[in-house]
Picture 1 (tube, rainbow, N blue to C red):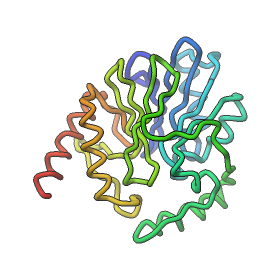
Picture 2: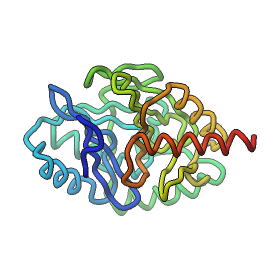
Picture 3: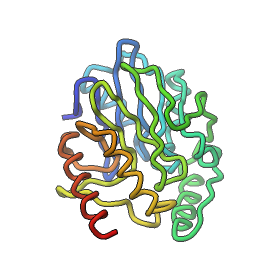
Picture 4: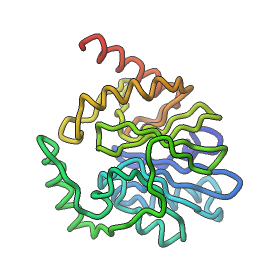
Length: 232
């Protein structure tokens, strides 16, 4: 079911999912999905009866194209503000800088921006580590670099839930790191996993994961961390 927790709706697509958070003021889209994301968002909102609620904001975890392709469209269509990590500004402007094996991602994204008519955007709110968003009972930006320089999770402390973006992927009952070509610094990503677990969340919500509960994704992440630290 799309509702993964009271007040959280999951929009699912092949190999990618994103979330909608609801409070008394309206809805907030966490990342905007990739190809077909707009259509999937609309159908998921209709399915849950949320289609007439105002979409107040779009919150970005990081600047990879599969997360920001639809951000400009969502902001314009809904009249919503955009909040995004400051350190990934070059991605939103359509000029990301990649090095090492991640240059493969840069080439793929260059093709994607051209063929999918990517629209640049400037966030209304630039996010740094520890910034607090006035949504729900307060959601805090947590810098979790490694996947990109600016990659962030979003910590809903009242519910003990952490939106983890692409910190890890979680399929077939197992968590793993994203492929190296997608990471700015895979070793930094390992350290960010420890930062995330240090919050002692009750559950986590990854953007690339199977249809499982936040608690199950957390168990998988904890096992991944055990494997990574045992080999360090």
